[in-house]
Image (cartoon, rainbow over the protein chains, first blue to last red):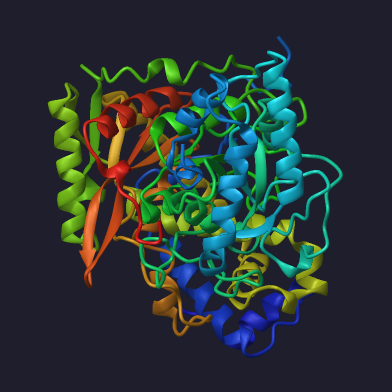
Length: 67
Length: 475
């Protein structure tokens, strides 16, 4: 996965209504590219078949569930 | 008893002396307030000390006890809470100037429960800004580690760690999203438990990452930790994700008997190449000691563990940026520099990466639960190192610098907040660094709602050692 450039990161910011300027822009670019790289490198077998279930496992009773 | 000796008693011992009328809550509170005045100018563990309110509560406790209206083992015992929890009529800053004038009109549930237990609130403890853990600038003073003032007491419940270790409160509350109770416990030689998510109410707690946040005790002994958790745990209709389960008697399990308990040593943690050799040796010795106490030691594997810090960081970044949506757009420069970077990163992280992080989170749960089929309790270091030096400045210098901050020791704690299982850190020794002895911790994790078992195992270990009896130089 190629690193995003600072211009691309700035565009991402604009897409959500944020104007990211220096010196933050450089550091946010480092941070975002590091996180992208780390997540991109983790591809255990079967991950595509895994759904991100709710954080409370189904067998646990939530306070607001009936019964 | 000499008033100067009072703060060095455990919360459990103080509670018993108060119950027997051998000591007054007012005496105890005055002793802590004097000690805070003498030491905290150096430590900066407190943001707000509520002297008048504390003495008033202590007098009320004294009068209740005189009338025979005993509330329980924390009646009259002074405590402090991370400034992340609402306290009625008391400033609650979240460690930020953005909330520099926020005075809640009600208590957080955990504070209300401690008040109902008769405990005496001494004040609000310092913390990393909005519990993010990465802030460098502390507008209310930088907390220092009582074991070595140049070092970090651990984030983000840094004031809770510093104050409890320096005997500036009998027990305290912190909050743990990615390790923020366990890290200060490790760095300050304390016992801290991240309870099972859903076992302690988050009502009235400033959020960091809603799906991983939970408050819990940081104490000097396992029994004090159990006592404090007992007071705060339980269903709360104001937090819809609290479980409708009876709260067990956490102290009843502190028998010293752990025969037959299976302790699963996490291979990827104890063999990590970034784990300091002295820490590894101490943790392995602690695990061996558990074996001597009758537990069975097995090896387990969590292949996802090395990635847990990055997964935690992705989820935390997005969820905290969402919580701070408006202020990021209107008051960005009022945050600490590192917090600005974290929030902006979370605001623009591509959705598919967040989705992948949640898939990896589910995978983490699967692996942790599979390990907990082979063992009753998982064991690993609390951190890869003792308390590091306080950071000298904010900012990220390179992509590699950023990567380092999302890896390493943070995975040791991150793996359990992702799985939402309870995890506890208990002192297991000291490491000598430049002539100073720095504490280190053993981390234990268990099945959901097995917090009592963790306390039981930790207590058995603690009672076979003297680590918890040592005092930092500032004491």
